[in-house]
Length: 205
Length: 206
Image (cartoon, rainbow over all chains, first blue to last red; front, side, top):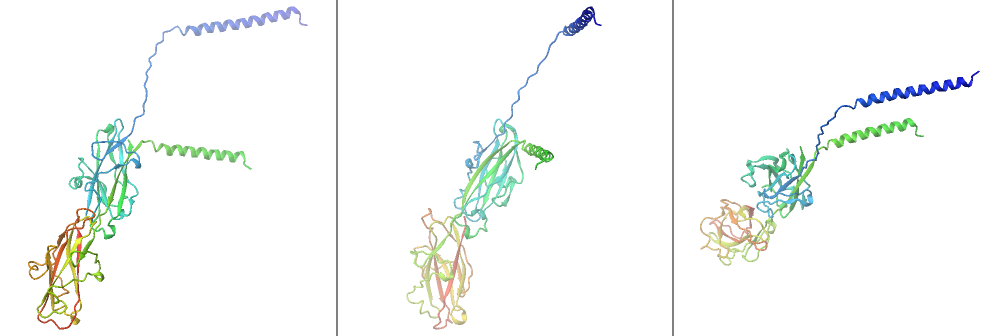
């Protein structure tokens, strides 16, 4: 039979154990605190990141650049020998210069041609595009250029190669566009019209 | 009924598609910007017209609609030619109003009735270029012809004559008079009627 004394004894024992465990925990805590007793110092590096820009601009005179980013705001090319009365054998030339804006990363430019409008002269016209070193685009400078669109191509033809534009407008690409009504154009071509929009699509590199 | 397994499969396929979609988007990882430029082109117009009197011009663009030359000089002779007689007629040509380019005019053909039934082999001709206001006769039809033929159906020595377009869209070009001289040889056969047709072609020169 369990006496009252036995019960008290057991409770006391239990209490001692709890205190012992608490005391042990305290000792551990002190130990843990002791590990902080060293000096600390840190160095921090910071940097902010900003995305670059890619923006190309064009000029019809080789010097006054602005953005013509949609077909609706296309630059009107300044064709020499205003092509208002083309006759068989007529070739007319126009310059379009492209470069990156400042600031802008570098990129490449791909020439594509739209669907010709007008009353059907596109059937008879041919054209070619070359890059030239200067900004004078005419029958003298054109032959010395580097072909982008082969001479005699249909008006729907695009560029066979891409051109590089350097960053921040450091250099410009001068496209010389030559549109020809061939000497073989028949009488049926008389009085017809054609309008065309060329796209110079830049892609960042 | 849709089982849990089916749903899981659909979920897996959708997840796969999502991954593919991300892959496609990744190929656009370059920036794009475009420049657009345009131009408008219009072909010119070109029309040659002729006149037998130097005043009233019209198109005679096929042999069937040829202008009938007025061989009125000397008076009355053209319908009553005799061996060795010569008749003259003028024909004026110009580039019509609205023509946008200059041209070179060249005699491009001569046809006539067959020699067996006509005098085409006994009539020779020469064409001379005169000023628009000149009179086409023996006195003016001299020098080097711009075309000639030993018979009416022959054409030799065709020389280009420059034609100018009008200064504005409503002005015709400056006219050129072509003076035809037709001469009968000594063997001209009596009573035969001979018709001849000449064609002139203008070619634009820009």
